[in-house]
Length: 356
Ligand SMILES: *Cc1c(COP(=O)(O)O)cnc(C)c1O
Image (cartoon, rainbow, N blue to C red):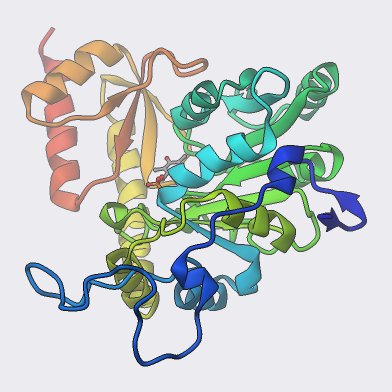
């Protein structure tokens, strides 16, 4: 039986009992000279490149490298086909469709809601306060009123508001909530805060989600990480598709982790540019307010989001109109670009102010 600090993990009973598929690479992982166990092509790969063998289903080398980087143990790590796969798996592992519910902050990343909907799991939205931070009292009240909630999704720094959630509030929820608390830290590299990677050690129902899609500049390889209690990691491993991390992705990620200084340089450049861009935007007539950001984007309240969006589009610049999310009235979400791109952006918005 799966135990965490003496308590059973709050996941579906049938998933706890599930006997997972065992692939050829699970059954035999020692050293042999001739592999005739997986019906692979022994001759090579069409188009070249040694890609004819199935990849390691445990992505062990990648986890060792990532664990060193994050200062956690490899058995605390799960690797997913993007963090999107991790988000999807958490809803399916924690919540029985039709019985259990999942809660998520609002406004936040749209994938949480979509994954819950696809899994047939009813959702409860928890509004953030006017500063886009957690309202601890309201959150606790909603959780207490809905004992069916088994999974709570938080995002810090939050998309689309850009701010970190208060660390003490997050940890207080992780301690008091008896379901799984997931904190999506896709943007944590851009924040002046190390994030919560070290916390699952003390909070066995806490899952931290990271991605290679943003600061690392590797959105195309589709790689996300979950940091959690090893018991929960084992459950995620049982449920995932056997070869969810393909060989090319593992190669590219290992290369990147070996060059973590590249990522640090990206982050420094983008954070400096974020600050510069925020100051420039604040000067513009079309801009009402630039929200404080700990991420690689800015949430900007415009006098009219719609006309600003169209003006930008006419200049060949596409941003995200987030006006219809709660608390984001007349807001555009603008990714920080290169210095040249950001100059084009502010120039296009300046013209917008001049045309009545
Ligand atoms: C961009 C983003 C991700 C990244 O998802 P991947 O599937 O890893 O590319 C995760 N969470 C949030 C909130 C994001 O904005």
